[in-house]
Image (cartoon, rainbow, N blue to C red):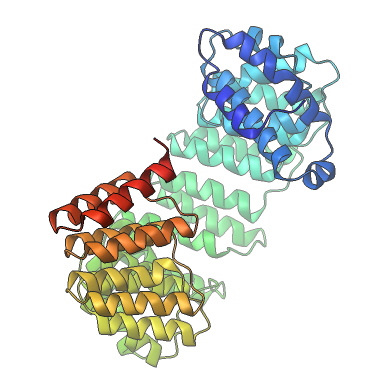
Length: 467
């Protein structure tokens, strides 16, 4: 008989105690059942089967990562192994190279009916690459080709090349790139060139990276957005803004225009390198010349600058680029509204919220919550509560963090009765308040002489949390 998902999760938490083997033996009927259950059937059986299945995967993953005698423990569970289970466990253990390899070898040797597929083999190869287990990684990839007749995908080869680059092993990255056509029977695509480009830039071999781009062009390949972004980001990180600009101009003259304008790439490169003032200056120059940045570039700039506290610059830039025809997306408002609310520009925050609604975006808690908090900070509690009620009437239900924020702000402002009402409202909606909110409200009510209401809130806490 299947256990509930709650019971299985409890088993997962107790998987390392003194009764470990008994617990795991109790789990194996569930795992065996779930492995034989077709996906469509599991879906029709409701949420419980899926929850139990993933709880079982979580439990097995914990054993793989933490149990010194992993193989012995897994044998006691007598799991029915298939490709999906192996893949999900390997993905859950993606930071544990040695343990993942042990689990894979156990699955292959103890279950003769199991036949590895490309999905789990490539997942294991990626895990071993992250863990710098390169020798084991190559053995797995060789087994894919010789023993199983599988072809390594270009995505996995790109991943390996970039992992070598991150570790400064650029010679190995070049070797993999050169072996792609003969050994892996795969063409040297733009994506593979980009991965090698990334590796070269990681070790600051800019001349080699530039030569690779020219080689791409000679072979008839067209550099894509990532090709340009990799080089521009690398040059900007090294403080070589002039070289980045000349590269973009040269590519433009040769007819290889990037998908976005060169100056957008330069702005993003400067931001990634931490040159915020240079990025601001470049955007100012663009706007002055009548050009607005790409919306993703603008969002990146706004997000970075708002964190520095220069909100006025962000507001002015927003209005200027809108006049030039830029259409902000929801990410623009997600960055701007909290920033202007935090500094008390409530009127501007409302203007931005109304603009987002006019643009067709439906308000959600992370948009209107900062405005409510900003009004409470300024002591405008009546306005804040009125706005909060208006949002609910318009069909934008608040979530638990919004209620928690509102109760906290009411408590700080001495409005304990309002805070108590929000506590009650939360529980009626099925949202469980945190203990700090109960403590804040009950203490405040007692201090202001509202003992009856305080007792009611204490009774509410007991009914919600139990005695």
